[in-house]
Amino acid sequence: MTDDSLWLGRMRGPVKMAALGFAALVGVIFAWMVLSNVFSADPYTMFDMIRPAGKPLVQVMLVAICGLLLFTSIYLSDFKGAIEPAADGFFDVVSLVCSRLAMIATGMIVLVMFYEVVSRYVFSAPTLWANELSLWIAAFVFLFAGQYAMQQRSHIRIYVIYDIMPRWMQKTADVISVGLICTFFFALVYGGYNDALRRMLRMETFGTAWDPPIPGTVKPAILFIILLVTIQAISNLIADWNKAPEHHSPADEIDEDEIEKIRATLEKKD
Image (cartoon, rainbow, N blue to C red; front, side, top):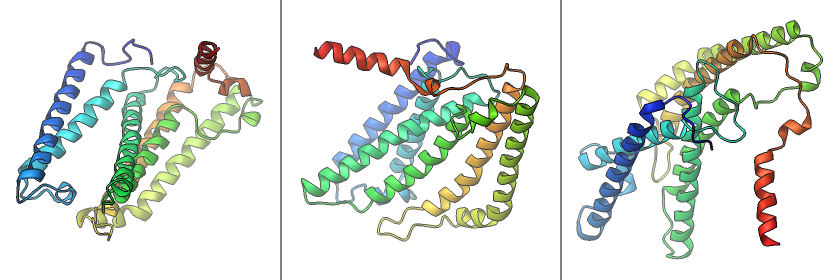
């Protein structure tokens, strides 16, 4: 990623310090919880993490984790990836922050599954929560990835037809496409709002031994993130309206930066 600030400017340093502060707080609380599991008769468990009532330390831990994820995502969104187009829409920054959150969450899934594999096959002590937690995180990764794909214009598009259209017809196709996205969003809200609200208000759980509130959080999140995707589609339409026509080819999919890294790696081996 490039080091030039995309949007934070002078705030990049304070945001980084906030992320490091929350990381330190999470580390201290985690260490304290580990020690309490060794020496206390009432240790903290993963059941407490989804039922923090009456556990102030767990509540502080959850707030610290949220702060860490938020400020880290904001900080990382200020860097531009090698193949990322420049942010030019009014909603692009929000989508970039969500994309960095999805990237972090993917790493969290790897850590959770690694912990489960070691616990199960090395210590013969499988967990009751790793599978549900990975599913829970993966649901949000999937949703945020869709928003990021919309911001990057990397969703499915039939360029063979689109490229041969005159510019006015391309604009018409873009308007129709965004209109269909808006229609889908309103239909989804119309059909799913009451059910999502009901599940969220009662924090419907998953029905397993750990019993996390996956339905009570994911169903409302679907509606909310589809709203973000719709806003991003409108932002793309506005940002692209006066741009010159683009022509696409298979070569556009080639990551030259990655090819150079592979070539450099092979040259070192030789």
